[in-house]
Length: 296
Length: 300
Image 1 (cartoon, chains in turn yellow, brown):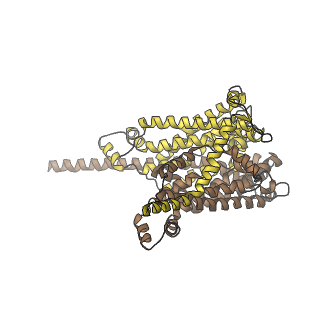
Image 2 (cartoon, chains in turn green, yellow):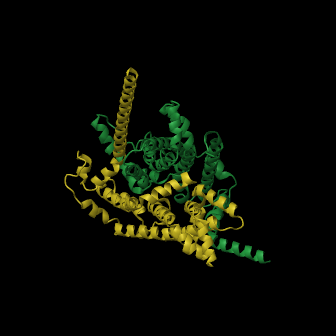
Image 3 (tube, one colour):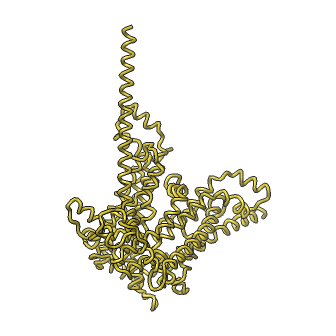
């Protein structure tokens, strides 16, 4: 009886500490998730009660050219920006990791774009940089090249946003740097004695040793890139134009939910996004056994 | 005699070889420095150009050839600060700071409580709940935002700061729980044992021992809460349509819409001002920032 009482008290105290989080989990995560799952099978405009619609929202997506465009835009954005960003991050981290003086200063300078990158201010700056009379075109003019308006051309608008994402490689770079510092120097010395080239050292020592960090960065950046919103909204003025070329998935979802009040359709879109991210994360984790090397 | 000469010669050649190697190393280090500085300048140039342009008149911004303003003018700042529809940027800054401060208080209290339970207490379903917490870290918030909006709308909380601040008191940002759990696990158990000997219960141990010792993790939480809340656009756009509640992010966007593209000068001025708080935090708390970024990836 005594021990039972003790155990009960121990649990009560712990759950008291957990209670804010548990209430949040229940009211702001679990119940909303289930509600949005329910809403995804209904038509709901917030004014009249939801009407059951079965799979209609989900089947409608395949015929919605705007939806398909948003999937294409987002996929292109993720496939381009994530690998490029990680390559820059690793490349610069490797350069910085050579025991340079002023490392902390350089690291800070390269981190600045990540600090500001998500802001409205930088998105507005981007709109100017790549505009018709923007800084980029004036730079190109010095070499006698006449640039177009990169923002208002459907062929290039998305790529300006890819550049904005890659520009923010500082955050993953900081993580790579911390990982590179933990690779034991003895390994390189041993390799040098064996006459391994720098190239070989990178692929046989550096890359395997930091592979858990590559995995972490890859997953984090993919999740992050799928949810990009602010740059597309600001650069395209909330429209996703020109010709839907910057209509990010989240931007279309926002339009559907909060401009057209098509809540059921937007909820279905959110669940597809969740499932897509879950599948991609699972696939990466699945393959990681083959390429991620864990130290004992 | 002959052999020792040969040895000396061989030694000299070795020394010469290492000298060449050393100077080669030096050269490659210098080249690395040059590349890093050059790339750094290219990366920061747009931001520096924005700041410099904010002191130029509109003609100088687009037609001028020099990076530096012909003469430093403050008109852009004065004109920009006046804002839109009778509300100045002072209002927007006040709103942003208010939301940030309340969010910081909320996150520190609620996330540290949950982290204390996960890292130092023993209770039923601990592993399951911890796993659930980690999963919520990866959830796109879009699956919850629609029902949340409907709920906040029913509560008549749209156009109040409540949807942006209240969730922070319910530890909705799992990243900070994770960060603090990592930190609190490293606090030696002996300290806790000693406190227990003195008759301290879990509540006093949390308050008197664990919280003060976790200060670095708390500071990291504060800084990231500040940066993320300051930069947050989606939820501020969603919940604050009344202009007197506008934050800097939403205000800036409205400002562009109302001014048109003709007044880049004042837009750049206000953009610059909007980034100053972030930059200040960065300058003063860089150490905690870097720690926060690496905590998840390396120690985890």
